[in-house]
Length: 465
Ligand SMILES: *Cc1c(COP(=O)(O)O)cnc(C)c1O
Image 1 (cartoon, rainbow, N blue to C red):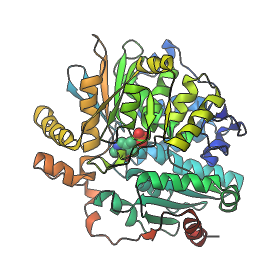
Image 2 (image 1 turned 180 degrees about the horizontal axis):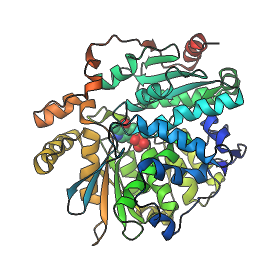
Image 3 (image 1 turned 180 degrees about the vertical axis):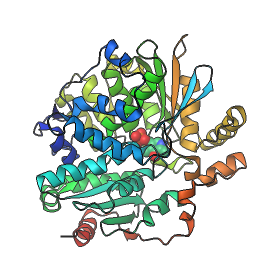
Image 4 (image 1 turned 90 degrees about the vertical axis):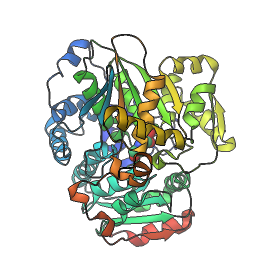
C-alpha cells in the first residue's frame, strides 16, 4: 500500500513512513493511493468475529509490508485489552431503528483511545525496528491529549508534548493529562484556543530544520493510522447490524472531521453507508459548509462540548482530495485560499455531490442541555454533551427510508463532563472506579505562550537525549 499527499508535493511513502511522519512535508495529509475494498461476501464473512479479529481484517490491507498479520494482531490484542467492556465498542438500542455505539470504554473515556491505543505500541514497534526515536507533539481540544499520553507514557523511543488551550478544557480532561507523571510526558498549557494550538503544531512541522532536529511526529487525526483504526468500529457496527444486506447511516459529533472521515473510508471500502451526519455545536463551520458550499472560518466560542470547539477542520482536506478525484493542485489552491482569507468555496456540482452523502445539524448549548435531559428521560441513558449532539443530529438529519438503521457515535463518557451533565440532568455522573481519585491527584503542567520559537525551546529542553 502506497500513500500520497493531498497536496501532491511530498514523497509517496509506505505505511511505516506515513505513520512516523504524521503530516506530509508539503503541508498535506497522507491518504492511500487506492482504497482497498471488500465485496459483499467478504463483508458477510466478518459476521461473528470478535472486535479484535474484525479489526485485523479491516486494517491489514492498509499496513502493506510494514507489519505482518501477526504483528497487527499483537497490536490489536494489546489495545483492546485496555478497554473495560467485553464488546470494546458496545451497541445500545435507543429507538426502533436507532443505535448508540459507545466508544468511551478505553483508558481515558473518549473514542480517541480506539486509535491511540493502537498508535502508541505501533510507534514503539516501528521505531525500535528502525533504531529511531520521535518527539510527538499533539494539539488537543481536550481528549486527544490524555489519550496520547496514556498511549505513549513510559515508551522508550517516544517523548510526548501535549498542547492544550489553557482554561478551555474541562477539569476532568485537564487532570487526565496533568496528573500523569512520566519522564517522557510534557503537558503544556497554551495561552490561546485549540485552533491556536493546532496552528502551533503546524508551524513546528513547517520548520523543516526543527522537524528533523527533534524527529517530530504527530498523533493528531492528521496521522493516517488514527483514521485507519477508527474505520474498524464503523465496520463493526455495520456488520453487527446487518451490512452489507442493510443500509446504514452514522451520526458523528464532529470537530476536526477525523472520526467522520473514517466513516467515509468505511464506505469507500464497500460498507453500504448512505448517510453521514455531522453534529456541530455553535462552532458550526462544517454544518455551514454543508449548507452553503463555503468553508468560512469564524471565531471559536467556548461551548458545553469543548472537544468540538474548532473552526479549522483539518481532515476535510482528505475529503476534498477524494471529491476532486485526487487532483492535488485543486486541494493546494483551496487550502491556500483558506490560509489567506479564512474561506474557500467548492464548485456547486461538488457541493451537490457532498449532499448526496453528508448532512449537518447544529445545536447551541441550551439545545444540547435539553437534549441530555430528554435522552435520559426517554431512553434511560446518560450521555455526555458531544454524544447528545450526535444523537439529536442523527434524529433530525439521519437516514429516513425504511429498513436501514442510524448509528450515533457516543464519543465520550458522561463523567468526562460532569458539570455539564449535572446541570442538564440534575445527576452527577460518577467516574469509573479506576479514576475515582482523579480530582485529588497532584498536577504537573507548564504554561507556554502562543509562540513557535518559545515552544521550540520548551521542546528542546524536554527531550530525553
Ligand atoms: C475529539 C472529539 C470529538 C471530535 O472528533 P473529530 O475526529 O475531531 O471530529 C467529538 N467528541 C469527543 C468527545 C471528542 O473527544
